[in-house]
Amino acid sequence: MDWIKILSAVFIVAMLVFLWPRAGQMIRESRKGTINEWLWVGLLLLAVAAFVVFLMQSMHSTVV
Image (cartoon, rainbow, N blue to C red; front, top):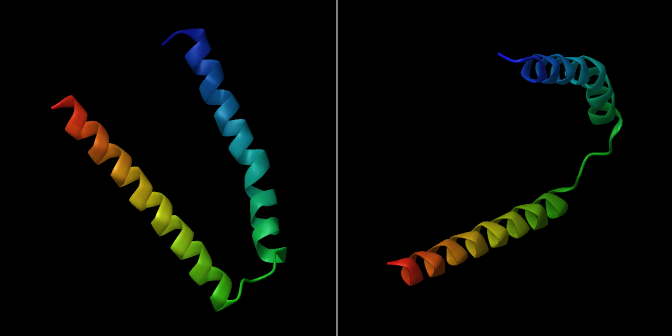
């Protein structure tokens, strides 16, 4: 391993050490969504996934 990989690994570990407590605090103090909001989130994620599948299928048909 060269020194860039070692420094990158140290940097990633340091980021996790410093950001993990903040992320936990943000999650504890954030407001909870209603069921209607979560349904919209699910619908949007499903639409994005369907669009990605459509793009993959359209690219597959042009390559073959």
